[in-house]
Every structure is written in C-alpha cells, then in structure tokens.
Length: 344
Ligand SMILES: *Cc1c(COP(=O)(O)O)cnc(C)c1O
Image 1 (cartoon, rainbow, N blue to C red):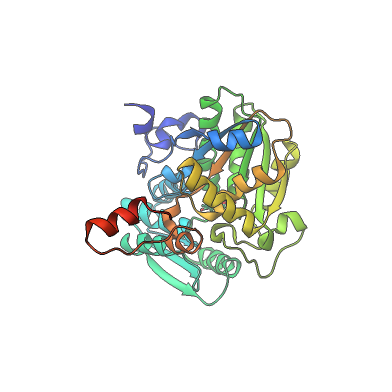
Image 2 (cartoon, rainbow, N blue to C red):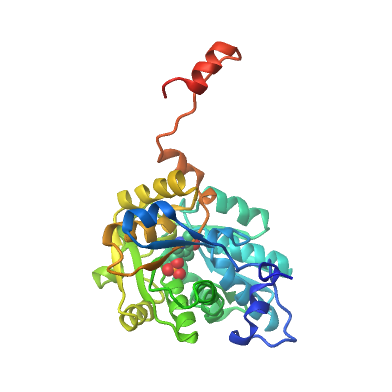
C-alpha cells in the first residue's frame, strides 16, 4: 500500500491515542497533496506551496479530526454524535457516523449552511436541525445537551479532533524535510491552528504560525468576542473561538501572529487561486492566501498556505463572484464560431 492508501490513524498510530486493537472508522482521509504554487511564488518572492485539504473524503480537513473523534466515540460505546456546524463539520460528522453505523445530529444556524454541505449531510442520513440563532449559540446549546445525554460532541472542543488534525503538520514536516518556515492558515474556532502547532511541536519543529480571520469576525485580532460575526467566508464566521487560549499560545510560542483580511481580499484570493493556480477552494480557505498577499512572507523562503476546504461546498458564492458569463448560442456554425473565437 502507498501512503495515500493508509487510513490516517494507521499511518500515525504511534502519535495518536489509539491502540492496534482499537477498531477505527476511516474513509481514507489525510495524506493530502502539497502543491507548488508558481504564480503565488512569483508574486511574493518565496516558494509557496498549498496544502490541499479539500482532497479529504468529504472535502475538508475536518475529516482528519472526525476519523479520530468518531473512532473514539465508537470505542466508548456511543450510539450518537452531535455537532454545531455551518457546513464542513456537519458533512464530515454525518459521513463518519454513517460509516460507523451510528446516528448523527447536526445543529445549523438558520440559513447559514452552504448548499453543497446541506446536500452531503442529508444524503448521509444525519438529523439536521435549523436553529434560529448563530453558530456560537448553537455550540453553547449542543454543549449543554451532551452534558446531560449520552451523545458525543464532535466539534473541535473534542480533544480527538485536535489529535487527528495535528497529522497535517506531520505530513508537511515529512514532505518538506523540516524546512517549512511559515504556515498561513485560516482561523475560525482556532482548533486547526492549535492542532498544527501541536503537530509541529511533536516533530520538534517550530515554523511561524500565521493565522487569518475575516475582518468582520476577528475576535482574536480585536482581543474580545464579536457578538454578530459577519463575513462571506462562512467557515470562519465565528465570534467567540473555542480554542482562544490555545491559538494565542501557538502564535506567541512560534513568533507568529493572528491578523485580519477583508472579504474583498478573501474573494480576490479566491478568484486568483481558481483562475491562475487551478485550485477551487472555498472562501474561508483563501483567507490564508489573502493573508500571504497582504502581509508578505517577512523574509521566509519556504511557506505553506493551508487550503482548508473544497470550492464545491458553496456554488452560489462562486457564481456570484466571478467575471465569467455563459454565452447563449443557436446551433449553427457561424454563431458558434463567433461564440468560441470572437471577442469576449
Ligand atoms: C472549520 C474550517 C475552518 C476553520 O477552522 P478552525 O479550526 O475552526 O479555526 C476554516 N476553513 C474551513 C474550510 C473549515 O471547514
């Protein structure tokens, strides 16, 4: 078997809280591509690589955490998992629960779940509850529920999520032979930046951790929670990150920072990646690239931007944010020639 055919827990079992005899729930997550970005490299004067986390089975890095969280839940005898989610966590939890043969409930803030993710979550058979409230309220409520019922919470407050997600840092450390200098990563609940930093520390590495929040949802930059977070980047529309302290520790210890990028900068990076590098990821993912373009590399020559999730999550945002248009044409030679070859 090549590395990419090994479930994440098997590949890194020595570093994860699972014994060889533990049954694991896997969809062959992890071992994602690390792609050179020639256009971005030229723009910032450094070697820029993209960690394509959208290549995970359900389309985001959440699968790394979910294989561990659901495997642990099954090991404990749980019959149900629950999460609050604006998209990727819901789809991932629903898929792994289906694979494990247990039930899954998902609380989504009303109207705030992307089409592609709703489709996945429903197809996997999860019970979807639309809450008249925002993400932070949804999370507070599921935490209360799991305190009083035998249901396992699989949001990133779950330690197994962080354990699984730290394996992305292992992969980067191996692929770049320990030469990574700076990591650019979107930050919402801050579980992922926490996980990468843990992973790098376990490898004895300490690249600078540079996290990016959207301007309208930047509690870690402002230093206080944001009551009504707003941004086009739904996956990082979080006003009160669960992993606040951990994220601050990661950036301080690594001499990194958490900074803000605007929605316009996020969308510009979104279009650039798709049109120039051939990578279609969701807006939240491109906060990392927007941050790189806005703040530069500060002397680092080997950098990685984490692209956290796939673009097909949210086709509506894509269609609303690009210059391409569909040309109507009759089925005749002359008009089709004009449509294909004429001035756009
Ligand atoms: C969950 C998610 C994030 C934010 O990660 P946190 O661990 O909450 O900081 C960013 N991008 C995508 C695509 C996500 O699904």
